[in-house]
Image (cartoon, rainbow over all chains, first blue to last red; front, side):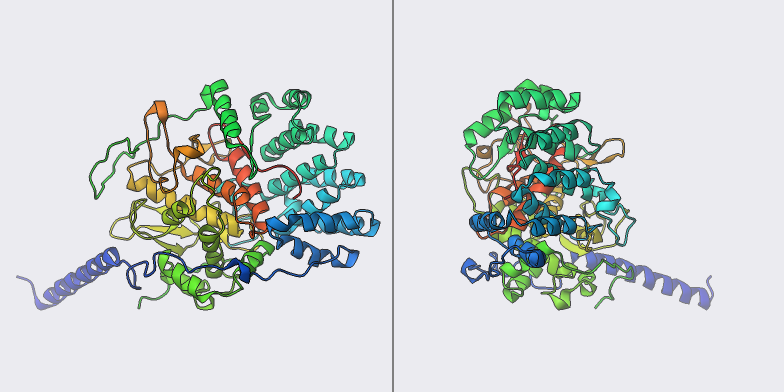
Length: 284
Length: 268
């Protein structure tokens, strides 16, 4: 027979078990502490006419930052204004020098700002940008971008997108846009030898694009590519002005040529407790 | 009220140029939007209390940044039936927390990273708890490549697709590829017309006419649509970020080759 201290202890234990179970069950059943969602099934209406755009900025040595901000906030429908503004400053050596100096303010902490800088440099397309763009593409990754967060420096690697590779890929596209023989040969070199796959494949695409995808450029790019990457030469580009039938025919042709690149059937979960019971595997 | 989580989540505060640009599109502070998003995406977990819930328009903090991503998913696409991979309604319904044709209900919270390499994770197999999506600091910390409104939007779509996989009985984990054993998926090619608008939740596993999506495929199809099929008022920094991230994912996060690139390689 238990003495009273043990009875009290057992009672306390039962109470604790009950409290934990109750808490967990409450968690399970708790839909939310706000009313059932959503109160409104549609998001509030948005009126694009309310968008306030920054006033245009003239590209000058002292306005690089505000120009970058203006470009970043330019709607896609008004992108010709950006091209025109850059064309107005193309002959300005001081602007060119300042743009390159700003590009090399590293490590970058804002990838979007550097993407805009690279685009402006590419649009300006001065032949002397060859050297700094090549230098940028060849920099060690850690010199370009160094994430310091709550995790170790490689804290974004879940996507395996190395931040420097994104910027170098953009830089190689801008290098190709210079459209000089020297620049295009360098792009072909990066397509073959750069350590980043993102950069190599961007280079292959930029090289052929800047040759209007003519057969000779496709052949040269395929010859320069690593053997396992030659199949990526001449891929169709998904753009807002594409012909969808042509695009889809190109994609189909790729998988007919490389049937080994077609995926296997998706894998079913080993244990799947489903509230609706099993379903047919064919749902269309 | 339960206390806030005992584990501290400390992201690096700050707003980059893409963040402030997205925020400016809707005037910097839009109460109706963040109240709606708070409910529709179930951002009601206690973790948000320390991540900007009470300063909802501050896009230096995770809550405001998440609202930016939700804005892009809900408003930015043209819904061009002939060209766009999937409709706004499809992306919205998949990414939202409510029980619908895509998945069971789940909630979204900010959590400490489970390892040094994660941006987010979907918790579908949970015992005595609700399904959830965990967002980690990599998605919010200034200086992180993933700290991008467009990438965050594609990540919300990606994670919601794990919930779709679970709901429909498919394996939810990623493949591992490369010498560094990083996450990847298979890419299941399809035509635009294979999934009519409103049909994204459907699938067909018959090998002769397979129609299916993997989570990274959802990320890149959203990025491709945002980069090239966005409304005319969507700005240059958003489409550039979506294009570059989409192309990088296309080349590094699939076990098989994907037969297209997003956009033209020109400055603007």
